[in-house]
Image 1 (cartoon, rainbow, N blue to C red):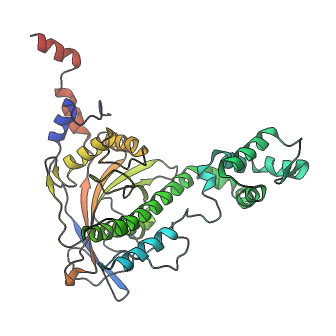
Image 2 (spheres, rainbow, N blue to C red; image 1 turned 30 degrees about the vertical axis):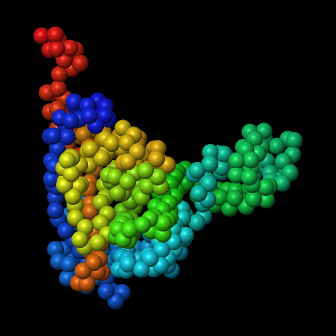
Image 3 (spheres, rainbow, N blue to C red; image 1 turned 45 degrees about the vertical axis):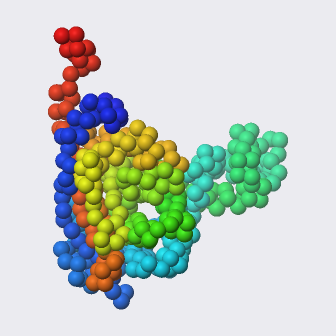
Length: 399
């Protein structure tokens, strides 16, 4: 059952907020600590030696995994670079280098395919009709000289592609040919998994922007708090890609390029084999030992009531709560809100990932806290059953 509207001040949403808990629902902990290149995960004790990372299969749906081994991020161009998840330093240069290195080496995961295949409609069309394109090139010209008998539809697509990207004929050939040849031998695989590839490419772009923006804010923002912010956001995104790498989480919201100073830090999604979202993960990033979840007028940070309010603010267009350079985040917030109150919708979970830097004993530790499930369809049923319809409200007013 979807919400009637997404206005934070509507009568229905104010009642619904009161139905939702203002306190965190769950509290299971795990601690990840790294020392001398070895790693272990300990449930319940921060004094464990720590780890290289890879998910044990349970993922964050429910209790935090008992065992973690590292997996390389699928968005990395190479597996040779350091898979840092902790930044145990306040040295700006060290933090900047780590962020910039990861941003530079973050890319669409399948090197055999260009990101353009999934982002450009003409490229997708040309690759999908690769046999017809190949036949036309053989019979009626080449990429550098399209003959008069060349298929007009394909010709138009090629010309539009060149104009849009400012490519010359040779660049068009360099971009299309490797994809076309690879697609020819993997046609069914890529048609079946097109949506997954499309979402993967967009997630990689968001992750790259997230890391680049963290580096820019670290370099240009004032105040010592920027170190903790960068450390927490970085550790969080790296943990999702390595701790839970086999779960194939995709980033939907990271550090905002513009706006979005308040509210939810990161949002990730998990999809089924057909590309449908089956789970949303709301993540709070903390970057120093002294950082705490705050209690606001809308409830404790990461409580159901607080998350509900943040999503309403995003959905209704409050610029303080979403990245104004990513207007689709408003639509995403509406989808998450609908999922929270739909008995058959995707699950919505919460997690806090907290770098404990700032106290020598814990400098190399990250605390992972399971915040529980936010789905509560019965709350909306109860509120809508008790809220008078518009016509009833009018009659009551006249009485």
